[in-house]
Length: 295
Image (cartoon, rainbow, N blue to C red; front, side, top):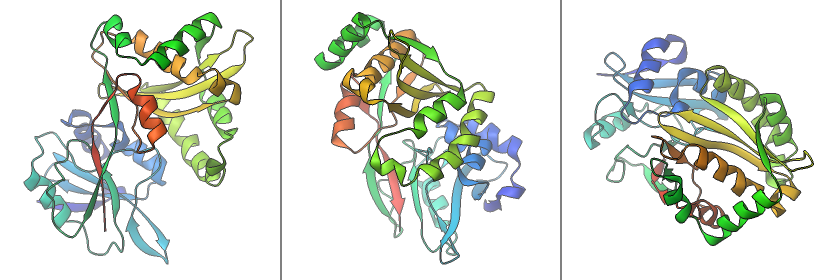
């Protein structure tokens, strides 16, 4: 039986256990992660004793009416389960979505067999690029493009070095982003990042790292989310100097090298933007598709 349960009535121990043990678990669905990115404005469809769940973040930005939306920094949500997820499970969940939502938009995870769903929802394929790291470093390096190899050699020559950052330094560096489109939503992003990033770090499943020049200038930084066998490229920024020196490529390479032959997947979090697709695939990453579902 599928029930709709509001956030205040969620059994968070059982919820988190489901996400932890799910065959397709992802950190975005932990209760504390959802709380941070939604301001605790979410509810969920739950089967039995939390064996299968589907978070439903919502807001009331549409003339006060409730709509399901997809929060920032949660690439994939959808249905999570400790059991195999078949089409009939997905069908049951989508049939159980309350009609009271005036709009619905969600990005469901890679393990949700959504392609054949036909209940009035529109579906679009999205890209996510992943690189299995359970191979020798030499094998991984061989799959890099010539451009990435060039960036690595230059970084070594320029004596770049990597250091772990504190969360406050990372957020401050992120705020100084010179990307015009980001300035419009920077206030909203900051309101999410200030509770989210410390919560991740405190639980020991993520941290920010930075790449510095020989002179001590921070050139590039990224926040790495380490959970469910994935090293997730959650958020990153580079200075103009860092972009010219392709510092992010060198920084990502250093993380890949450190974790070579370990049972991790480097998760680039994907993109449909051609330039980013080219950048991610230049490391030898392959596409693991997921889907956006809306009506």
